[in-house]
Length: 310
Image (cartoon, rainbow, N blue to C red; front, top):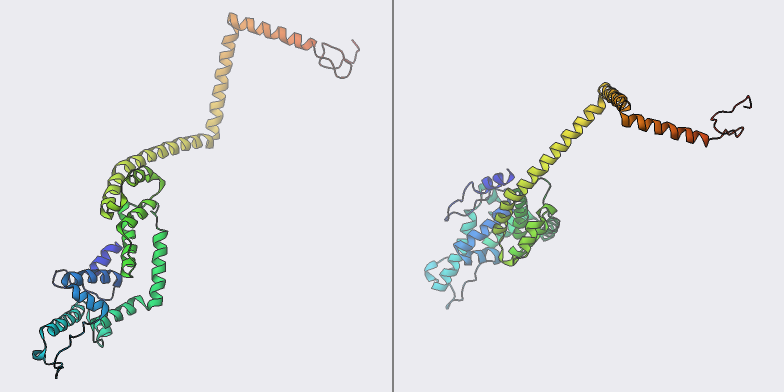
């Protein structure tokens, strides 16, 4: 949703190849990157003027009597003037009326660009703080729990875009390696497969496609199986808890088991094998009794003290 808001703000105007990206005071870092791309495509000399300042006029012989008299300019001088003017015109057409007030006093395209940078990015010291914060976000970047690949790439692209706007770009290879290191252990099999390739030849878009495909097939199937196990475990646990929480039902089940056991024992005693085993058990009990002595009188064959002396 946030990305849609940014895109909407950036594309209010300037959607054609002949009109520059439009800046209305919002999302300066994004506009700055797009403006650089547009200016270079428009004329690389124009971008040079915006970043480094006006081209100096080639010396003329004799010196110009009237700098505003274009008819007295040489061909080389006219070319320099034209590039300088094109750069200034490009920036004027790329900003809203409110932003124009900030740069109306600037005489060159570079002054205009620098004024916008200071306004929205701060001084060099403030820029350094912003860069350090972005680098920190980049170094600690990782996939969030429950986040999709699309959502993760959107966050990552924002950080990369902001870093590039501050003049600190990362190569495609660095970005690919960072993304792979940012994935949780559930992605281990896919990460190992990808790392066996030459990552410097793998673009971020290709990596994104690979990870989305893996997410939709393998991980989706694994997650479904895990959910089934969790549901089955919860169901069995709830059933057990319900049984334990009902003392009357538990007592009734114990009584029923006891009655069944008593019935089985009675039927067993009436069998030949049961009678034999019971007799053997009685003999053993009598034998064990002979080995028992009273702890007071020492009389054998008696479990209790015989006061009569017999």
